[in-house]
Every structure is written in structure tokens, then in C-alpha cells.
View 1 (spheres, one colour):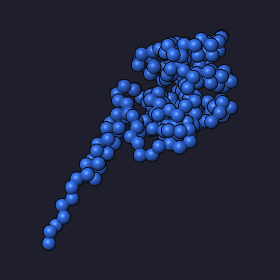
View 2 (view 1 turned 30 degrees about the vertical axis):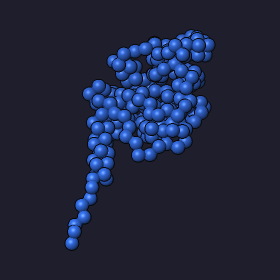
View 3 (view 1 turned 60 degrees about the vertical axis):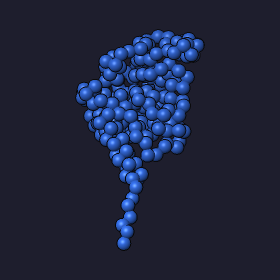
View 4 (view 1 turned 180 degrees about the vertical axis):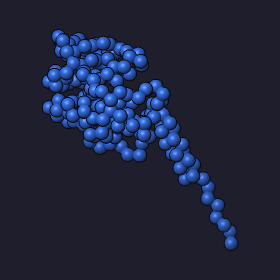
Length: 209
């Protein structure tokens, strides 16, 4: 989707997820923050840890460490997991990921690169959990600011956004996912695209008088 931190691409068909994989969320907000994805410099788990600590909320990190990122994890991230409040749970299966997201007050998505889409954002929305995300790459196209999450540009704003995001209507977060990001909606968009392309390329017969 997005190509830069400030200029999203238009006329795209975003990814979708099967609705049946995600049961409707409860209305109560969680009491911890979540980071889900990869331990990598561009994903900025170090930012997530600082934000959670400053916001005064526990952080649960569910992420894998690829061999190329081992040094970053060892030298940057591991030293920050230095006491209560930050829990590194490693990789989780799909069920574990859903349970982690459903129980979170918000998902932190503090990326530092032009993310093409960010599937974890719509997974969180499917769980009814709002997202605090950097205004970069595709993020402004995925997150409805003030509805499904809060868009931020720096850590100070992110800390403030945590409290605001935690009080967003989780049913409305889920409803937005159902409207925009189910696999059925994705398929319908592609069908419409193919039909338009077929109509545009069809030969046009002129009536001879």
C-alpha cells in the first residue's frame, strides 16, 4: 500500500481476513499493551518498550527473532527487558496471538519504515483492539484515526495516545474491520476491479450506417 511516510498510494485493494477466525470482542478494555510481529530495527520494539514504561502499563511482546536481527535483539532489546512490566513471550500460534490481542488495551505499532500494509493492524482490529501506530507507510490508509486507533509521529504523542486509544469503542473497532478488511470484502473489491478491467478492454463495435 503506502510508499512513503506521508504520501499514501491511492486506488489499492487491501488485504482481508476471514471473519470466522475472530470471535466478537468483549467490551472491557485490557490492562496491558501488546507488540506483535518481528524483533527488527524497522519494527521498533525498543520504542514500544519505552512507550509502555512511560505510560505505566505492562507490555507483552509476541515476536520472533530472525537470524539477521539477533544482534539487535541482544544489544538493544534484551537489555530493556530488565524487570517487571515487560514480558517477552516469543513466537505464538494464531490462537495465542488472538488471545493476546483481545486482552490488550491497545496494540503498539511503532514502525520506522514505509510499511506496505501491516497485517497485524487489521488482526488487532478484528479483535476489537485499537492500534497506536506511527503515521508512516500504509498506516494512515489502514487506521481510521480516533476510531480504530490513534496515529502518532513521536514517542511523546504515543504515550498520550495510549490512554485515549484504550477508551475507544471496541465494538466500533470490530465493526470497522468487518466493513473494510474481511476476506469477503477483499474478494468483492478484486471482482469489481477485474470486471472494470474487462469492460475497459472489451472491443467496441460501431454500427455501420
